[in-house]
Image (cartoon, rainbow, N blue to C red; front, top):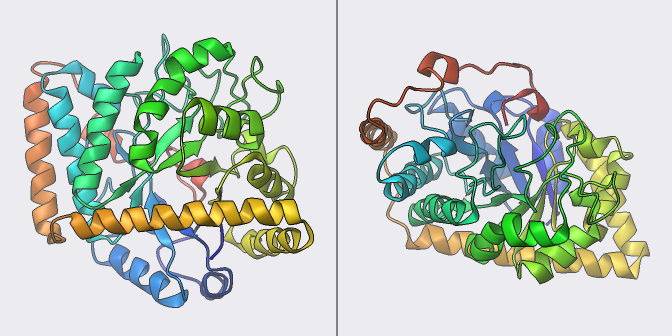
Length: 377
């Protein structure tokens, strides 16, 4: 088994992708809107991929609701995280939405939702994080994000908290450049780390973001390449013992720091267990070969890889347990009807509050294109 999470180029596998999946056996496949056509195509794509590798990869997707909604063309539009603070019964409804998303992902045989976002929002959300946060204080984020997470789990779908150690007051969108979170260690621990510390081990997985924290480590060093953040803060300060995943390493905030091979090695050495490359699958064999060669020649790196693989295995078993304990997979029509019921109840809970994004706009992908960076994230 490999430690890489990778993306596919389209809605059907190419011959090259089939070869790479069989030979590399990636830990995870991350799905994007570019991979999704209709309720029949998507499970068929998942089935084909899982039939190729000797050890089927874990399928993951960003399905938060609101602007980050990979299933936007398949089920009724789901609200953003921020919208739950604008009406009544917010905890109950957040749990319900998690359950609806979990039901949908189970139907498509997708194992993990890369959600919830548990960043604590600042005075205003940084670009790229608009309306994706549950609140501006840790307790609200814990209540609503935790309810969403448990809704996912109740339907048999795994979760992954993001974006450690918190980018709620970041200066920019890390997809396109450096985002700086200029706060002291004490402030970060007292505020931004709290949701990760309280919910992390229940989730079993945390995604480390690409923000830079100049008061904690090097001013130009992304969190994904920082041992101070991926070990000292995540493992010690937050007490997390599960899987640490990088955000997509093809984002400019980290990809500008060196070759894909170099930044993958640095991410593993820093303490990440899963390294994500979501856009250019043709680069994956070289990254895989480089990491394997490094593990053979370097005992310390080999030990770090073994630790990562052990955590991956335990997380996989945890997700399998969630699936085994959940109700049977529903038919797609039942899932879609449950989504409609939820949306109707959610809108009633908000009273006369204006909708921030129309249904027509929500279903658009404003940037188009084929890569993860070019989609709403």
